[in-house]
Image 1 (cartoon, rainbow, N blue to C red):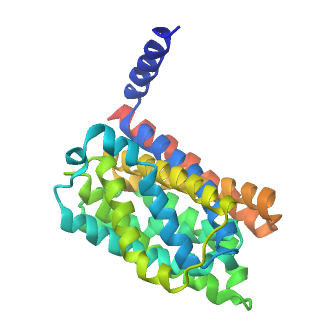
Image 2: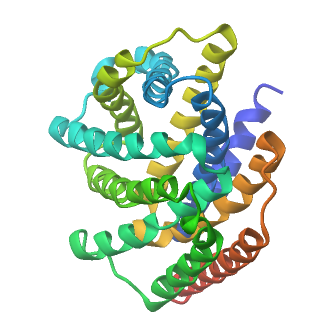
Amino acid sequence: MAEAEPAARRGLRERAAGLPPVLRGLLWSGASGLLFCMLNALLRGLTQQLDPMQTQFLRYVFGFLVMLPLILRHGGAAYWPQQMGGQFLRGATHTLGLVLWFLALPHIPLADTTAIGFTGPLFIMMGAWLFLKEPMRWERWLATALGFAGVMIVVGPKLSGSGGWHHLLMLASAPVFAASFLLTKALTRTESAGVIVVWQAISVSLFSLPAALWAWQWPGAAQWFAFLVCGLLGSGGHYCLTRSFLIADISSTQSVKFLDLVWSAALGWIVFSDLPTQTTLLGGAVISAATLWVARREQRSRTSG
């Protein structure tokens, strides 16, 4: 039995390696989306109990702690970056986006949080085209435009309400996160996924520490455990996302992120009793259709090419 399991894993790894790079990138990106939606649900609950800045700090501290066994096993030299400045630039950029995101998180339904985040691919695709010289086929532009239209169907009615400024604050975080992800893509040229994830946790923790200390209150036992789970989900999500950046163009992996709305709507209903509105369901249908269409187009393009 002990010999069969490694053989089975090797067979699965070989079959996965035979898939087209774009499809493998989409699978990694889709896995990261599911993990991040679970993380967001847990963080939303924590920000309703603790200060958002303290929650942000502890989420990344535990993201580092859960990776400590790997660092100790392979040695610190294996996780020492080649571009220390790039790691901290990425960390500072990501921290700025997180500040905006965490301040808005306790006040916005989970599905709306995810839907607003879907504006990120627009900024990512434009940035990847302008700065990373990645090709932009018409299918990617059309799928992203349709996905953005779906997002507007979801969040448009909320922007005129009394809590609309929270939605605008969340929306402001999208281009900042896009810049962070573009920096991540650039770092993958010289750094491994593990190195990037480890130094993101270190740099964001350091940048978040002052604001966390300002509003500090000691978490209870259940909250400490919740932060441990956050560390596992967050590190796993960032690892999957970085793996997708290593395998495929960043533009081609963004379309599958629109499926996050499905996961976040389900979790919002189960955990917070946030029932999806008709506009959320309609927007989700538009987004899902665009995602499935571009995934098939990307796969056919690779096969014919």
